[in-house]
Image (cartoon, rainbow, N blue to C red):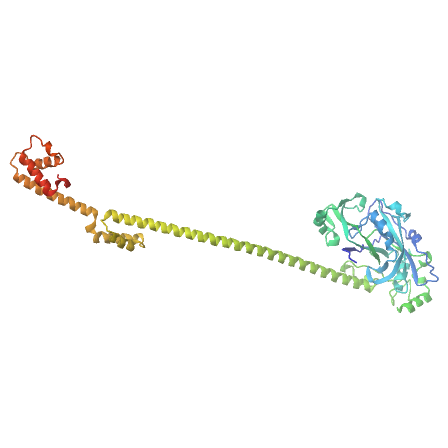
Length: 511
């Protein structure tokens, strides 16, 4: 059977005869009103059967476990309760009876309702069931149920019924605090909203609230299967009591010894009928007939007084339930941590992948920058080299061989080394220094000019000074031969031509 969810509809026992809750529908139901739902069983011929009737649940009204069933679902499932098991505190290994009849009844009064009447009902109503307890299986329970029908007993109405369902679908139900009725609810069917809010459900470990004034519940829907009934002291719904026939609702102290002896013989249970109304409030010391079947919710409930009244199975069930809760909590916490570790690892892997990509891009960028830097340095070196060679070319008269030697020497020199090298070359190549050569040529020209002046001075017989003759010669050196001034003598022209040819006066700047 593949059912995603189950719910056991069990909760704290309603002890007061008048409920402390204030609700327009809530009223005190009498156990006597349930007796009309008892199945017809000939108990004289079937002394091993105990016919019972009880309210299994309240439709259209949320229970204390945070679950609710509406009218339509109730009408569809009610007959499927028939032939399902009755157990103790929803322990399926402790089946003690069977359901034989299923009906609807009015909330509070147990007036019979038909299926047609309930289909469209908005207000709460009961699913009321009838069945039998197999007395031979658990005579103590049978006696307790009978005792719970006695208004004078401390166990009066201490046994109630709690249903169990299997289902695959649900909607969320929102109600204001102190309101349990489905007719006043807001429903949430959208899957995304349900996924967002379901963590608040009690069934999933939540608080049952979404804010200070609003409670959240689960409405059972879809293919719903009744799985049985658990007899409990702590029903989740507003139900109370399991009814038996009037003649069976006898005080425990009036039970017939021979009947109890027959039960003991049939079930191999050692109950010696040590019943006494004056002995510890009719709690049997030797047996467990009057012990309360109670679902313990908190370890603080376990007291010395309680241990005298509850069955050992109640303690065992509590321990098992606490171990189960602890195991589930541990598993949930472990899964949460595992999921967190997985998410962290995935995030780390993603970041590592991204980091590798960034690293690769950074390496590429570094390579590009290094290449650009190399190109920049090479270009700067080339420009410096060109400037240095141009400087040498400008300063010295160089041959190709000179340039090759200089290029080899200066190509790898830094500024400081080059400055020293340049100073050394200024000394070594001073003969090729253009400025020095020009100065030397100028000096030579002056020397030649001086010699010419002296020779002219010595050879001329006119009153014109040698300087003037030289100046005149120089001024008229580019004048055509047919442009000889009238004041120049034939002898002077001949002298100028003579020196012009001899010294190349065109190339001198005589001052």
